[in-house]
Length: 212
Image 1 (spheres, rainbow, N blue to C red):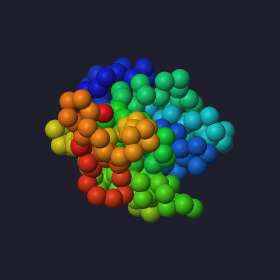
Image 2: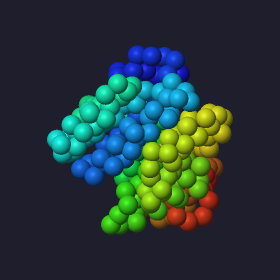
Image 3: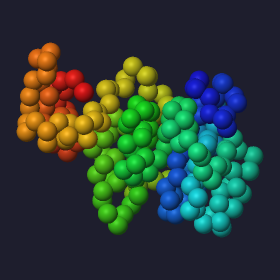
Image 4: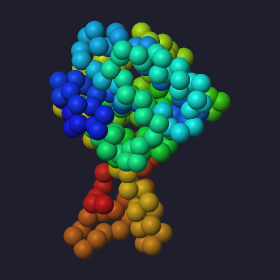
C-alpha cells in the first residue's frame, strides 16, 4: 500500500517511482522497464517514470515501445516532485545531490543507482549513504534487469521498522550559528549546539548534540 500518486489508482500494488536522471538517465529507465516483468511476477507493482524534460525524443519513444502492455506510467516532468517521492513505496534514482537531498528530507525508501562517471561523486555518495542505512544502492557496473529487479524486490521487502534515523539536514542553520557564536554554545535551556552538527557524511558517526 502507499499514499497514492496521481498516476497510480490500484491500492493493492506497490508503486515504484524512478526520477529523471537528465539526458543520461535512459540506461536506468530502460533497464528498469525491462526488469518490471520479473518484479510483477513476484508482487504487484506499478512503475512511475519521471524522465525529466531533457531525455532525447528517440529515447522517450523507445521507452514507450518497451512499456507497451506493462504497468508503467511515463511522465516527462512534474510540478511537485516531493509529492511523487513521498507517495512511492520505493524511489529508484540516480545519486545526484538535489535528488538525494529530497529523498533524505522525506525519509523516503530509496534505491540509488549512481551514474558511472566521469566523476566518482555519485558512487561515493550512494555507497556512503547505504553504509549508514539511509538508502539501498546498486553499483552501476552491476546494472542489468536481473540485478535491478532483485534489488528492487529486496528493498520493497524490508520492514518499515528496519529504517534508521535520517541524517541531520540543518547544516545551513548550524553554519549560521557557528559564524554568529564562534563555536559550540549553550542556549537558555542548557542544550549544547555543535559547531559541526551531524553534517560530516564522510567522517565519523553523526553527532546529535542538541536541538535544531
